[in-house]
Image 1 (cartoon, rainbow, N blue to C red):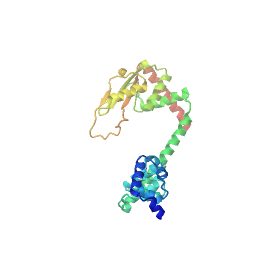
Image 2: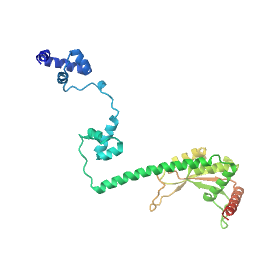
Image 3: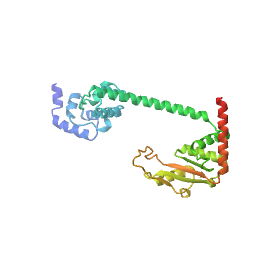
Image 4: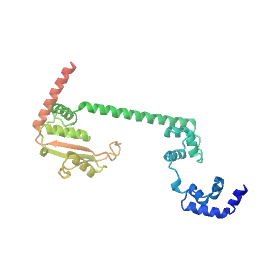
Length: 286
């Protein structure tokens, strides 16, 4: 003990040198070797209150996890809830957040609601994944579409969505209105199959007055591959304040109207194809 005491008799002077070296960025080992301090207790006292330089700190793979745990704790989550969220042990969570205030105790009904919401969110995620798998598998079943298949699909699509002739109101014109870009693309592919050239197509947008009309016009023009200046005058629908509209938001672009000029003969063929399809469907159900 006497030897140690005499070796570090000028403790304050030694501490000043140790602190200076620390602030230069030296590690504990480097300071120990430089000052010939072999006693860890003495070295601890010499460096007391001086933080280690950043380069000596080991990167911790759990730093991100720790920060996330602290964020969740501040939001009021319990150890159990944080464990479920992050998948780490409660002992680790306790070490990471022990300096934070404990969350207020929730009444049992609130905890039950939170647990039910978590279960429902999980169920929705599972359903969404199943939905994606089903759609992907169904899309693969279509593969290449033959001309005959496109003819049948387009005829059925037109008869469901297009303008039809009435005995009391003769309108043998091919006019189609829809808001679904996929439907529009299929319809145009069908018209191309029927040798309806682009020079016979007239486009017009129908949209509510509260929407971004110019953006909608540009969107539809880009989709069908024409200059927006070739569009006919847009039809603006006035908003009825008594009606609660759901077709709003950034995704709302109104409807695209596609008229085929000189189309009386084409309309009669469409009606004939449809009649033939109905007859064939009757044979399958007989």
